[in-house]
Image 1 (cartoon, helix red, strand yellow):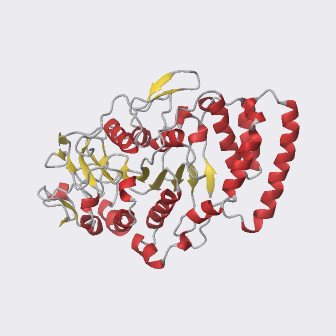
Image 2 (tube, rainbow, N blue to C red):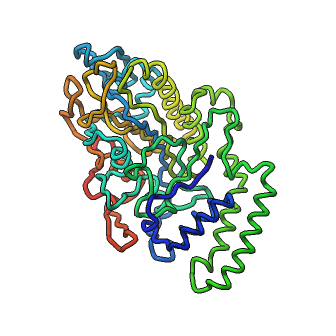
Image 3 (cartoon, one colour):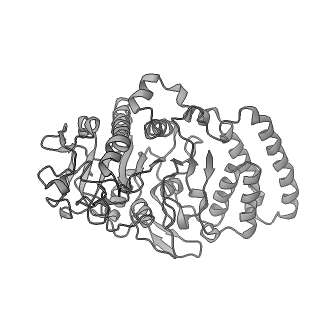
Length: 447
């Protein structure tokens, strides 16, 4: 299923009550793209759009989001010399980077450790779901009165549509939006992600609106019906610039929905069985493959949202049997595939989740939320690879060297993607907001 997910407040878009009703009407008719495109025009008409980046080819980005919070000790920051109640059940494995070891549950990633860097000094500074999604995906502390935009929404605003492709796509539904995580916030609903909820690994996977099939004729009838409705509305609302220009955006939406290029980008059947097997026949595996196809087609930012990482119980069984093997295979395959295609230097790949997990194993054989230490991985997009940034204490309790905050993660991502940290935006009521006022790029990772 493909949807444009809107924020909780119409005021964030600056749209009128009629704009809101219009979007609802379009959704009822099965057309979500025109609504989003018209919102974009309305924002532009009010001067909300920033000057686009200079004409060049800045990196795209794939964010692999692990909702729930992955254990740092059981992935990229193992503690083999710690007591059993800290160390856990897993061993360690040598990596391609000398003297660096990962959990033995990540053998494929160990072999490509030279293609990405690990931030072991990450200090999440929070341990609450929802709030974490907002903080980690924006670099800003949660503010109940102002929702800050996530990385993908900022990139969508800065770059817009490239080669006619949607700028920001989210694969999967595993983002906690209770605290406005993963959305455009005050930038406006037009910069929210285009969401694909269906599992790409399912046999019947298809993307609504891009897989019309027998519904194509019905779609065209609805399109014509909207065209007739607009003729009337133009006669009674000619004083509204957004209405005057609406036909342009219906045409653009129509072209995108029926675009062979868009259909091809989402069509995994065009990949060989070997490539699909390399990524793994799992939800996360095929989502990572689809993410590669999308950035290759011109999508600027793709979030692969996976869930199940909140391992309060049976942490080791869950990681070993269900979570780590498909992630290890998919993440490693993505890095290898991008590298072999010559795309890695121009595609930033980020791996992260809510926060870390408690060093001490609880009575339910699980690990709970931990706000003092976590893990973030970055590779591609000009980021220096094969690096280990910072370190945690011998028991994995807190950062003891080169701490990296969520704001610093944000600054590093924006630096790699070519967005100036001191970019200023305005909220719907005219309040100026700086993009990344507190964070600094991680010097060990940037040129």
